Length: 105
Image (cartoon, rainbow, N blue to C red):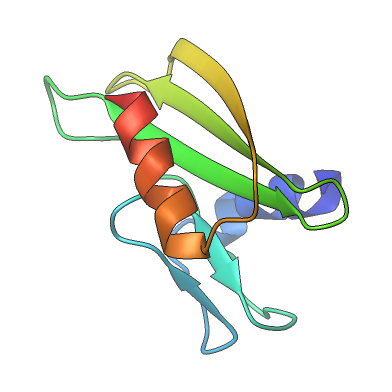
Protein backbone atom coordinates (compact mmCIF):
# COMPACT_ATOMS: atom_id res chain seq x y z
CA UNK A 1 0.00 0.00 0.00
CA UNK A 2 2.83 2.40 0.75
CA UNK A 3 4.17 1.88 -2.76
CA UNK A 4 0.77 2.78 -4.24
CA UNK A 5 0.60 5.87 -2.01
CA UNK A 6 4.09 7.02 -2.97
CA UNK A 7 3.38 6.51 -6.67
CA UNK A 8 0.06 8.36 -6.51
CA UNK A 9 1.72 11.30 -4.74
CA UNK A 10 4.75 11.58 -7.00
CA UNK A 11 4.92 14.74 -9.17
CA UNK A 12 5.65 12.65 -12.29
CA UNK A 13 2.04 11.47 -12.52
CA UNK A 14 0.20 14.61 -11.42
CA UNK A 15 -1.96 14.64 -14.53
CA UNK A 16 -2.38 10.90 -15.08
CA UNK A 17 -5.69 9.09 -14.99
CA UNK A 18 -6.72 5.56 -14.16
CA UNK A 19 -6.61 3.10 -17.06
CA UNK A 20 -9.27 0.59 -18.08
CA UNK A 21 -8.23 -1.75 -15.24
CA UNK A 22 -8.98 0.96 -12.67
CA UNK A 23 -11.63 3.64 -12.53
CA UNK A 24 -12.51 6.42 -10.16
CA UNK A 25 -15.85 6.51 -8.38
CA UNK A 26 -17.25 10.01 -8.95
CA UNK A 27 -19.30 9.97 -5.76
CA UNK A 28 -16.55 8.92 -3.39
CA UNK A 29 -13.20 9.47 -5.03
CA UNK A 30 -12.35 5.84 -4.27
CA UNK A 31 -10.21 3.92 -6.75
CA UNK A 32 -11.85 0.71 -7.92
CA UNK A 33 -9.49 -1.82 -9.45
CA UNK A 34 -10.41 -4.88 -11.46
CA UNK A 35 -6.75 -5.80 -11.99
CA UNK A 36 -3.29 -4.28 -11.91
CA UNK A 37 -3.36 -0.64 -12.99
CA UNK A 38 -0.55 0.92 -15.00
CA UNK A 39 -1.43 4.52 -14.05
CA UNK A 40 -2.48 5.97 -10.71
CA UNK A 41 -5.03 8.67 -9.92
CA UNK A 42 -3.53 11.63 -8.04
CA UNK A 43 -5.55 13.32 -5.31
CA UNK A 44 -6.82 16.72 -6.40
CA UNK A 45 -7.82 19.46 -3.95
CA UNK A 46 -11.40 20.76 -4.01
CA UNK A 47 -12.42 24.15 -5.36
CA UNK A 48 -11.78 27.30 -3.31
CA UNK A 49 -14.08 27.46 -0.28
CA UNK A 50 -14.95 23.74 -0.42
CA UNK A 51 -13.83 20.60 1.38
CA UNK A 52 -13.21 17.15 -0.06
CA UNK A 53 -14.42 13.94 1.48
CA UNK A 54 -12.83 10.62 0.55
CA UNK A 55 -14.71 7.46 1.50
CA UNK A 56 -13.31 3.93 1.39
CA UNK A 57 -15.22 0.77 2.26
CA UNK A 58 -13.68 -2.62 3.11
CA UNK A 59 -15.57 -5.91 3.28
CA UNK A 60 -14.71 -9.09 5.16
CA UNK A 61 -16.93 -12.03 4.29
CA UNK A 62 -14.92 -14.21 6.69
CA UNK A 63 -15.79 -11.95 9.64
CA UNK A 64 -19.18 -10.93 8.25
CA UNK A 65 -18.18 -7.31 8.70
CA UNK A 66 -17.86 -4.06 6.74
CA UNK A 67 -15.65 -1.08 7.62
CA UNK A 68 -15.99 2.49 6.37
CA UNK A 69 -13.14 5.01 6.44
CA UNK A 70 -13.84 8.71 5.93
CA UNK A 71 -11.24 11.48 5.52
CA UNK A 72 -11.97 15.18 4.96
CA UNK A 73 -9.44 17.72 3.64
CA UNK A 74 -9.73 21.45 3.03
CA UNK A 75 -8.94 23.29 -0.22
CA UNK A 76 -5.22 23.32 0.63
CA UNK A 77 -5.15 19.57 1.25
CA UNK A 78 -4.85 19.98 5.02
CA UNK A 79 -6.44 17.28 7.17
CA UNK A 80 -9.75 18.34 8.77
CA UNK A 81 -11.45 15.19 10.06
CA UNK A 82 -11.35 11.39 9.88
CA UNK A 83 -13.83 8.77 10.99
CA UNK A 84 -14.08 4.99 10.96
CA UNK A 85 -17.39 3.12 11.22
CA UNK A 86 -17.94 -0.64 11.18
CA UNK A 87 -21.02 -2.82 10.68
CA UNK A 88 -21.75 -6.49 11.06
CA UNK A 89 -23.28 -8.11 8.01
CA UNK A 90 -22.55 -8.76 4.34
CA UNK A 91 -23.56 -5.76 2.23
CA UNK A 92 -23.31 -5.14 -1.52
CA UNK A 93 -20.61 -2.64 -2.57
CA UNK A 94 -23.12 0.05 -3.61
CA UNK A 95 -24.85 -0.14 -0.20
CA UNK A 96 -21.47 0.08 1.55
CA UNK A 97 -20.52 3.17 -0.46
CA UNK A 98 -23.92 4.75 0.21
CA UNK A 99 -23.56 4.10 3.94
CA UNK A 100 -20.08 5.68 3.77
CA UNK A 101 -21.47 8.84 2.20
CA UNK A 102 -24.32 8.91 4.72
CA UNK A 103 -21.92 8.74 7.67
CA UNK A 104 -19.65 11.33 6.07
CA UNK A 105 -22.52 13.78 5.95
